Length: 193
Image (cartoon, rainbow, N blue to C red; front, side, top):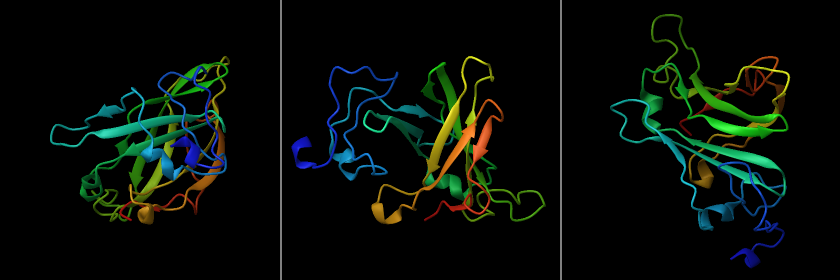
């Protein structure tokens, strides 16, 4: 119950939220509340996209908006078999972020670390599950919407013991360049952990 979560902000029920988002009670300093998984999910279904015909498990993208901190939390679940494939990248389903100028579509891109220059040297299989994640703005840049995003990235499984500490924050103006990741030295992840 909400009452058992001291320090958590209870969202107002009659508030207006961005399209596809719902209120999540959370500590404004927490990165993702552990109690969130115990809360009943609203009637908003996650966006699911199957990437290939032989992929039996679909990629799932979940999006939540915190009224207390005014932060979007995007969670992209990628099939673990992708890390053993010869693919050169994995692309998330599209998600929207709201700015003062309107709604802007984004995608996350997961790329393996190149371990050799020859053919197949930049695959998830050859990199042994190591790589980076980038955030890409899918909209054409215009003067009306200035998509400046401050973001952090984290990698892990549903188990708390297998979650790596989030890295960032990074602040980027996507009207200047439509793709951005973590700075060099922070951008290498071991997706298999």
